[in-house]
Image (tube, rainbow over all chains, first blue to last red; front, side, top):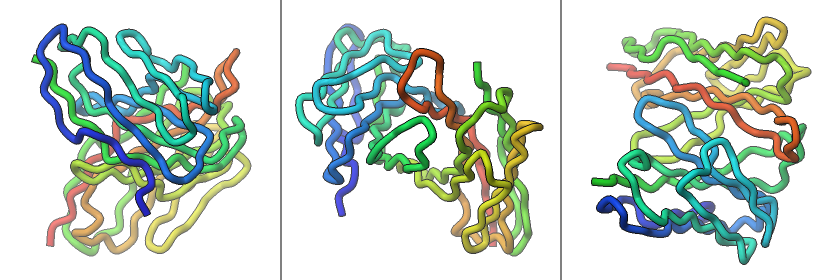
Length: 116
Length: 116
């Protein structure tokens, strides 16, 4: 069972470079999320998507863009990398997400990104 | 704004001890509370989910309680083992005004080490 797959696992970027973090899930989940986790901190929501073609901002969206052309894929793009974006990025998905839903979120193993 | 605090930040115990991890949150208007486990270099694994109407949930050696009115939850681990060593994260779900999403607010985690 693949679940949520993130690539790459590690990446080092120079300031100003751009890159796309890939996330794919094979559970036919409608809802997908991107989080960042800074050292010693909890996870913060960057963007989320409730279905193909629909995305919305989370708590810390600045400096990032997302797209959702298919149910399976939810890539996160950094256009102009900055040192403040050094973090571990997690992608997650869930089957449905009404506010009262108790459906768990399934997480990928993360992408460790350093901006130098 | 919802804030989630976890105490202690780190805990080191010998094998066999019973231990308690604490989580507190500032806004009691939550839908549920979840405890996650995070292993180094890995994503999050959901351990227990307590709905807002529940007082506790149990899974094996784990027991989580919820006191919504006081904004507190505890994770009790019985007969700890070296394999329990990981970071434990607490997260509460609430619906932000103007959003259709029940958002997770995470604590910073408790890093647990169980030594033989």
